[in-house]
Structure formats: C-alpha cells, structure tokens
Image (tube, rainbow, N blue to C red; front, top):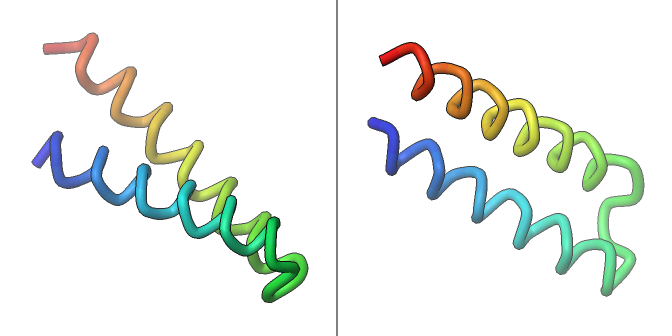
Length: 50
C-alpha cells in the first residue's frame, strides 16, 4: 500500500508540473499539488509510527 500511495504522489506532481508548464486547468493544478503533498506528509508520518 505504501508504494502505491507514493506512486500516486509522483504522478500527481508530474501532472502538476506538466499543467504548470503548459498552462492547463488553471487553479485545479494547484489543488492537485496540495493533494500530492498531503498524501506525502500522511505517508511520512504513518511510516514513522510503524
């Protein structure tokens, strides 16, 4: 499960970078970035508890 969530984080950040470079979807890209960062932080703290 851990690697799947990290894969999602990487894909979301990649889409954010692509959208920022090509000016696609406006503010939606920033929402996706926030979701990716939130998942990364969640995984970081969850991994520390184990």
